[in-house]
Structures are given as structure tokens and as C-alpha cells.
Amino acid sequence: MTTVDVLAKEVDVFYLMWAAALVFSMHLGFAMLEAGTIGVSAVRNVLFKNLIAVTVGGLAFWLLGYGIAYGGDDDNGFMGEASDNGEDSFAFRVDDTGSDMTPMDVANAGYTYAMFFFQYAFAAAAATIVSGAVAGRIKLIAFMLYTFVLCSFVYPVVAHWVWDGSGWISAFNTDDTFQGGMVDFAGSGVVHLTGGISAIVASSILGPRTNRFDSAESSKSFSSHSAPLQVLGTMILWVGWYGFNGGSTLGISTYSRDAGRVVLTTTLSACAAACTGTLVTFFVEGKWDLGCLCNSILAGLVSITAGCSVVEPFAAIIIGAIGGLVCYGASKALVALRIDDPLDAFPVHGACGAFGCIMVGLFAADKYTYNLDANAGLFYDGDFHLLGVQIVGVLTIALWVGGTMALLFGAMYAAGILRVDPDHEGALDESEHEGPAYVIVANFGGPAAHKASKAAVTPVGEETA
Image 1 (spheres, rainbow, N blue to C red):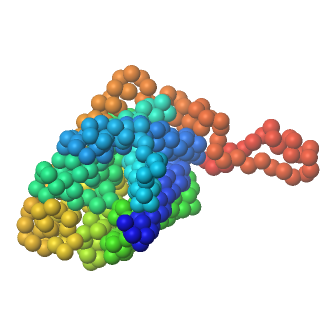
Image 2 (spheres, helix red, strand yellow):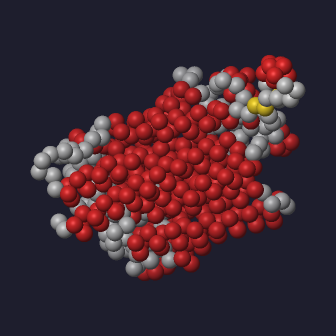
Image 3 (cartoon, rainbow, N blue to C red):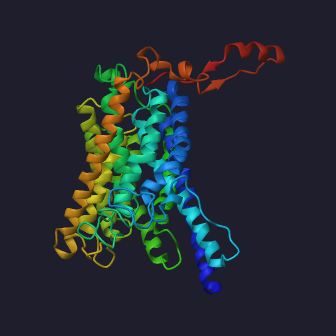
């Protein structure tokens, strides 16, 4: 290999690490959005869960998840395994030493390390989605168990199906794939639908927070407590999405055209969803709802994640605009069904994740599609093949995740380790942690007044969840 080839590979390594860092930073956005949306009594609790998702999830994905997702060179269609060279994928490691290693070997080793980091960030994101849906009522031990199971097995199986070269519905499986493979470029189905289905299953089995649906007036008391945190969290997630979608090219050398198009379609979809979601809320409810605007932006981002590399800009606007409406409708449906999802995790990630995958079957351009049978969207070649593959993929993911999560959360419910004591729900930070997340210590009148004030630490804010 020439020096130019080695340099190109090293640039790809840097690009992948940069994108992975952006995806990892989305956990900061999740934490801020969730903390701002729930009441002050559970802020410390929800932040704790966000850190659990990235720590327990990281160990689970290192030990088992990456191997199940990507295994070796000769895996079966369902999951990765330790055959061929797959043993290095479990308890992930890289053979990066040896006197016979060339500069390209060294660069390839670096790329393999960076790839694990990138894929781990995606797995942890899928786990974090559920944190907001179960806020205010799940036991931490139950959330830890859920995170381990999702990141070590449930999510990796889905990732293997769609993204691994051996997956049964993967568009990268050149040997034996279903109708040329599913097009889910950055994970509307793999990540967001998986997290969204997990969220609605968990919320349904947990049941609503105490008094959540007692009356129209009582429901209003469950509104967000910090608009600044909501907005900052949303914007940080939006920035992270450029690593999420743009980084899914898995390199920049020879892929600059695709990466550039991805960031454009990602932006347009978010903007369009923000407009439609906000306007429909205003016309239906007569108010400019900031929380709805935040969720609409996220809905547009989720909706375009599957097709960001294969649709044209005008299509991204259409997808985002409809995605904002899908999120709004799904949110109202959950309330009608009395399913308590404080962050609208299912409407944003589940409903819009499924919607985004299906839209690929309509809008994937023939010049961009990477379906192995060259199938494009219905509006381009008049063929239903890709649309059918996308629908099969969505249904299969929903059934797999829904079934496994129902067993897991159902078992934890039966064992009595799922839901916190109802008497503690209104004061989780007090009962489960060190105390309130927000405190003000007065310091007026000199040392004596400061000493007295320490005995009267005052929580800030009024309980809302």
C-alpha cells in the first residue's frame, strides 16, 4: 500500500472516532432533556439511569453484544458467533502487535478499535431511550438488568440482522439476503424502533405514575420543570445526530459526497418536522408548546435516519413534515390509552422510527439505493419490492424486541423488582439517592449566618412529577 492509502485510512479512523464522540455526546442531550421534562423530585434519579445506560451498557456490549452483532466472517443469519475469526468479537480485542505489521495493518487495527467505539455508542443510545419512558417509577436494579440484556443480546441481534454482512435482511449480505436487503442507513429501525418498542412495553407493564390520569387537572401537574434543560438537551441531541447519521458512512475518504448529502437531509427533515408539529399543536390546542417543538425536532431526526443517504432533499422535507404529525398523533394515542410515557419516547423513537423505515420504501432514489437488487422506492421505479422489505423489517424488529422485552419486564414485575414503592414516587431523589438535585444555600450576614443556613438547605422548585 502507498503512503496515500495509509493516510486515507488514518483519516477514516479519525472521522469515525469524531463521529462516535458526537454520538456519545448525545447522552448529555438525553440527560438534560429527560431531567428538564420530569419533575424536580426525580432529577437525580433520571440522571443516574442515563449514566447506567452508558456504563453497564458499555460492559455488556464489550463482553457479548459486539460479538452477537458482528461476530466473525461466517455467521448465521440470526446472530454473530465465535466461528471463524469471531472469537475476538466477544470480550472485544484486537491483535495489534507483531513485527510483521505494515503501516496499513496498524491503521486497520486502529479502525477496528474505532468501529467498536462507534457501534457501542449506538447500542447505549438505544438503551437510553427507555430511561425517559420509565422516569419516576422504575427501580434502579430493574433498569440495570434491562440495560445489560438490551445491550448484550436484544439490540445486537437486530444490528446483526440489518447491518452485518451475514444478517438475514442485511443489504450488505452478498450471499443470502431477503429481497436485496433492508435499507436502514443509520438506524431508524435498528436503534430507534428498538428503543421505542422497549419503551412502550416497559411503560405498559409498569403502569402510569400515581395520579397521572386521575383527572384532566391532575395530568397538568406532570408537566416539565425546566424549559432551558429541555431546549439545551434537544439542541445537543441535534448536534450529535450529525455524528449519528453522517458518521454512518463509516469513513470519509471516497464517501464525502454521501456524508455531505446526509447532513443536508438530516437538517431539512428536522426543520420540517418542527414546523408541522408545532403548528398542529397550536391549531388544535391553541398554544405554542415548547415541549412539542423539541419533540417534533427529534421526530424529524428519527424519521430521516433510515433514509438520510438514499433520499433527495425535497423528500427529506416531506418525510420530516409527516414525521412531526406522526409524533403528535402517537403522543395523543398514548394518552388516550392511559400509557404513561413522560418523554414521549415511543412517539418520537418508536412510531417515527417505523415511519422512517417505511418512507425509504417510497422515497429511496434509484441513483442512491444500496439494496442489493437495486430496488428503489415506489415513487421512483413503481416497484413494491423495497417497500415490502422495509415493512417486513419493521414488523420483525417490533415482534422481536416487543416479545423479548415483554418477557424481561414481565419477569421483573412478577419478581417484585420492577416498580418503586408508590409511597416513594413523589420523592425518588430523597428515598433512593443523596437528596434533592437542586439546592440553594443562603450566605448572607457573614460566617454565622452561613453556618446556620447549612442546617436549612432548601430544595428549589415545586414537585411536578
